[in-house]
Amino acid sequence: MDERYEKIAIQWFPGHMTKAQRMVGENMKLVDAVCELLDARIPSASRNPDIDRLAGDKPRIVILNRIDLADPAVTDAWTAYFRRRGLTVLQTDARSGKGVQQLPAAVRAVLKEKIAALEAKGQGSRPLRIMILGIPNVGKSTLINRLAGRRAAVAGDKPGVTRGKQWIHIDSGLDLLDTPGILWPKFDAQEVGEALALTNAIKAEVLDREALAANFMLRLRAMYPGLIEQRYKFTPDPEKNGYELLEDAGRKRGFLVSGGEVDIERMAATLLKEFHDGALGRISLESPPED
Image (cartoon, rainbow, N blue to C red):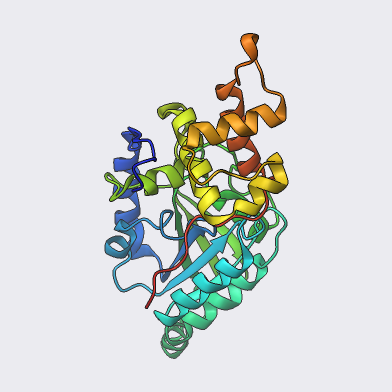
């Protein structure tokens, strides 16, 4: 990590996550396939490494959600990356419904051998059972509600709204098992924790929001400097640290307190909210690794 980035202590693993992981493991034997829901802005950071262990050899579908907020060229690169690894990939925006209705057909495609085996045994009428997994606040409940055409799951903009498992009938012959969002006990890098905090997978109260915003400013300068110029009307100085860039943005916004100093706390909150709302533009924080 660049020495100009602030080190942030992030507490991310509340006690109920252990129970949720155990529940997922116990119910895996009940399903035919697993749908892994990722945030298209952070496909790597939002991919729980424990899912490989939990899902075992179950057929998998990767769903890149929130494509309306992500950089479309980067999302396409991630789609190609996962497909090269033999995974079925869908791009969705659950809030508008874009791409969501492709899921039932994709499920049947990955389970065609299972379907043939069931029909051969005279069990062709048995519903296919799918588990949907994802980290908190990745849009899972919104996706399910779109699929079901009703408020089948409780949707919210806070981590951990879905507390227990529930079976949801999607269409003729397809049942979906919703599960609570699960995180994992340890991050390999601070950037992963920051990415999860920026996208609200981790509650904002557990970290230093000003340091998070300062580091995010450095990311924006490196990846999308034009968006800073467009939104905050200044060219980011390559020599300044994140707090100084926040000051520049706050001064342009007129966020001043007595003595003419910039209200950094207000600017930090504004930056994080504008990213979350998509007001900064379509931003992806991660690119796929080189093959």
